[in-house]
Image 1 (cartoon, rainbow, N blue to C red):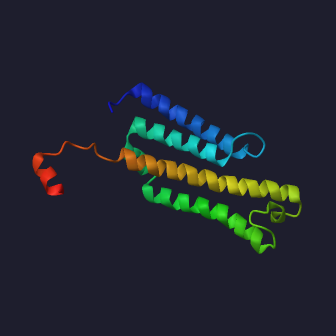
Image 2 (image 1 turned 30 degrees about the vertical axis):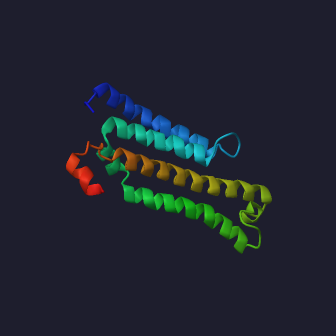
Image 3 (image 1 turned 135 degrees about the vertical axis):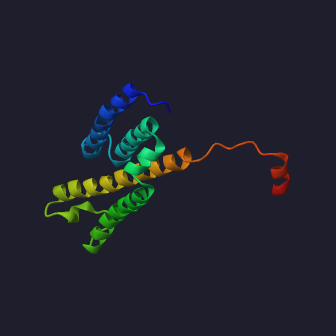
Length: 151
């Protein structure tokens, strides 16, 4: 992509706003529509926008693929760990009432943990999918020799 100064400047100011909106959707999800899945997609769109403006290599330096793998796994572990913790406390899987002294605060804590796990996983997986597709080279036309070797 040609280095467009105006687009890069706008992207530098727009990315924090996108991330802030993603965190708003994440933490306001138990009171209104939204939550982990929506916040994860919004946050990954912000990073995809960053990668489109500054280049894939730059985005991979900011968030490497290995970090995304760790984050995706951590999100699943947070989600599953919350359920296992409630089972170890004598309740059912994801029975949030047991996570705190009062059932209401336990519900809030449980939803916050589960939605955080979902948000981390969705954002990481969306970025890994983007890296996989954006990192591929465009297919070139095959010659007649290559077609004969495939058969």
